[in-house]
Image (cartoon, rainbow, N blue to C red):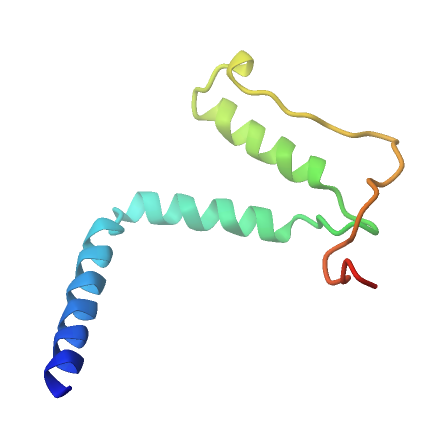
Length: 95
């Protein structure tokens, strides 16, 4: 039983080391990722007063600035429409 536990631990450590090597990014890529996540986190996207459209438009601008063609992306925007029916997050479907 101890052998199985030891093999499991070695396997987990090898997997962790491999994952860390595969996910290592250069400093510029890490900073860009940080900046994108920071920007998205700071945009209010709550149902009551926020806007996911603002977040989508911010990401569209980043893609355009990075050289993607405007025709290569599409965004579906629901403006001035009633909320979609169905359960909301945090609400049980059985409630």
